[in-house]
Length: 366
Ligand SMILES: NC(=O)c1ccc[n+]([C@@H]2O[C@H](COP(=O)([O-])OP(=O)(O)OC[C@H]3O[C@@H](n4cnc5c(N)ncnc54)[C@H](O)[C@@H]3O)[C@@H](O)[C@H]2O)c1
Ligand SMILES: [Zn+2]
Image 1 (cartoon, helix red, strand yellow):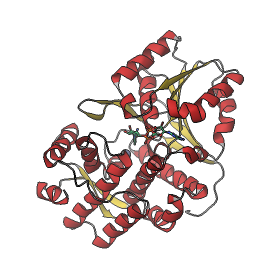
Image 2: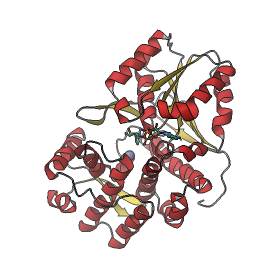
Image 3: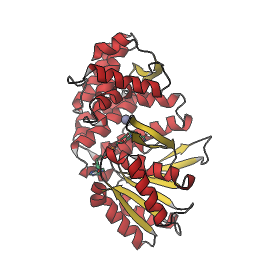
Image 4: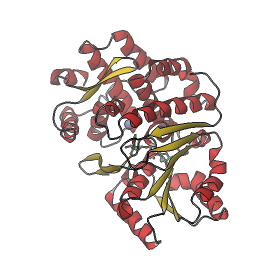
C-alpha cells in the first residue's frame, strides 16, 4: 500500500447522518489546469464565488478565475489578506456583504482556493449565507491538502480562542493538486508535514514507518512521495470522518498533539506556526504517555526522530510563560466541557482519547 505509483486518486467520504451522503476528493498532479473546465461544466448556470487570499491569487487563483470565465462560468473573485487574522467576524461580514451585493442565490457555489485559513473562512461563509450553499475546496498548502480540507469543519476565531465559532459544512468536492506545493514557503511546508505525522502516529503504524523511511526525501519536497503521503493521509482522515462526522468520539484522535499545541499557540500569541506548535505538543504529550506508563520510551524516540528529521520542534518553547500556558490549557478544557481531555499514544499508530492527565505531569513537560 505504501509504495505504489500515483496517478489520479479518488477518495470518497461517505457520511451517514448528513444531508449529503458522500463527496469525492480528487488528488492528481496537474489537476489545477483541467479544473476550470470541469467545474465550469459541473456548475453551469450557477453563480460561482471564488474566495482566495492575496498570495494564492497571485500564484494560482487569478489565473484559475480567468480560465473559468473563459469556460463560460459566471464568477466573482474575492480576495482576503493572507494569514490567520482573516478568520474573523469582520472578514466574514465583508464577504457576506459582497456575496449579497453580487446576487448570491441558494444554488450559488463558493470555491475556496487556498490554505486552511481560506478553506475555514470560505467554508464558514458558505455554511452561513442563506443558511448554507454549496462549497468546493481547492487546497493549496500541504496542511490543507493532508488535513483541513477533509472533514467539513469550517469556522473562524474569536478573541477568546481559535476556531471557537464554526459549523460542520461538508464540501461538494475537494480537488488536490500537489504541484502547487512547489511555491509553498518552507515553514508552511513543514506545517503540513507535522499534521501528516500526527495522522500517521495517531492512526496507522504502517504509514508512520513509511514516513520514517522517507523523511529525508520528503523534507526535500520529493513530489512523488508527497503525493503518496497526501493520498494516504486523506484516506485515513476520510475514514475517520465517515465514521464520526461530528467528532463525538473517534474523530478526537486527530487532536493528537493539539491539546498542548493549542495552548502553546495561544500562550505565544500565535507567534509559532500551527504545525510547529503541534509537533512540540505531540512530543510533549508522548512524553506524558511514557510517564503514565501507556507508551514505551522506544516509541517516543521514534516520534521525536521523525519530527527532528523533518526539522520540526520536539520541545515546548523555553520562553513559555507558565501561568499563561496553563491558563490557555484551561480555556481549551472548558470548551471541551470540563476535565482534562488528552489524546495519548498507546503505541505508534494507536491512540486513546479522553485521557485525564494529572496536573503535575503537565507541569513536568514545561
Ligand atoms: N478545518 C479543519 O479541520 C482544520 C484542520 C487543521 C487546521 N485548520 C486551520 O487551518 C489554518 C492553517 O492553514 P494553513 O497552514 O494552510 O495556513 P494558510 O491558509 O494561512 O496558508 C499559509 C500561507 O501560505 C500561503 N500559500 C497558500 N498556498 C500557497 C502556495 N501554493 N504557494 C505559496 N504560498 C501559498 C498563504 O497565502 C499563507 O500566507 C488554521 O487556521 C487552522 O485552524 C483547520
Ligand atoms: Zn492542526
